[in-house]
Image 1 (cartoon, helix red, strand yellow):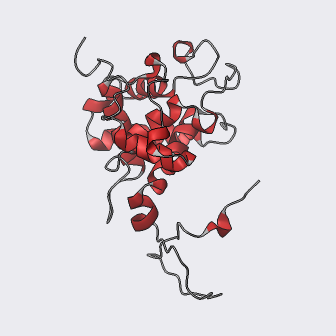
Image 2 (cartoon, one colour; image 1 turned 60 degrees about the vertical axis):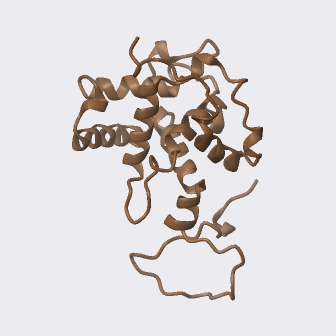
Length: 212
């Protein structure tokens, strides 16, 4: 077994950045994110960690701020999946998720999303996805994204993965206070403000959040 394929295990030091993001999302201290209770079968290989970092970076690349891969979102997604965030440990019948290969289903019917994505990208790239040029990686991922968000594909696995990438990034310090604008104590209320193409949304604006 090569280093790229060897399971990295749930080493807390290696996953500290991802654990910190997960703690913010679920509202617990970092120390409350238990890794020892996770299934060893869900531990990613080093190759899968590299893949998730690169895929996260393609979804939200670096611009004036670091990209999603730069801030540890890849590891966050892996941890979030292992903890079943956003219903990712719910069982689904084959008719509901026809894109999922049987070998990536657990006994309880839930999907091993990381293994599924690795296989799907390699298949679409006709080989090793990670060895493809950046433009080819982008093309393969864009095709998967278009398929996932086509009408009628509501249960496509990529939707869950992309949602977790967005959640992890915009929960991070960079995503929440640099990519978005943040003001802990708002000033006066302005009912009308000028907006342009470079206007950033506010991460501290909770009026857009639907509760209940």
